[in-house]
Length: 162
Image (cartoon, rainbow, N blue to C red; front, top):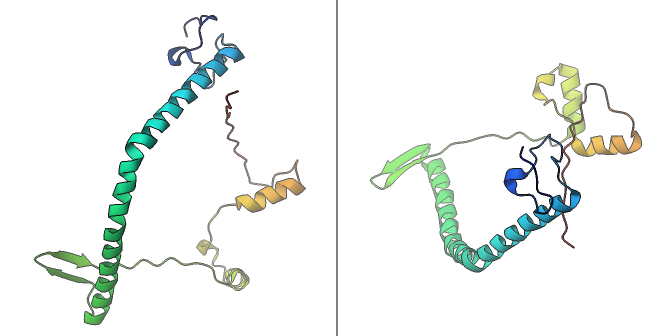
């Protein structure tokens, strides 16, 4: 890394890479660079809001009724497929293929888990921990982690200009 001139705010090329030390930066220099970058981001956002957002809004307004019409046609295709007993039909204009995907959801957890235990069908379960329940456990047991659980920590810094 090159030497940082303490009289100039740090530039992206002099910024320390993640995992390294500050490379001669001061907190004042780092804060000045953060402020410069966030100011540029705010300017880019303002340009977007004044130049691009109105066009995006007009597009969404034009697109919404067309998507609604497509939804109505999809409902018609599904009903027609049921009526004619086919999962596929075509014309010179195109082809429709009906597909079905099932997504099982637990309706009665007590009944389901009792059945899993009774029949040894644990393969139906996923191996993951509830984040919400883990946080509750941590509040009650701040120095404890259940066996077999590793806690990954992601830290970030937020900047607020003064």
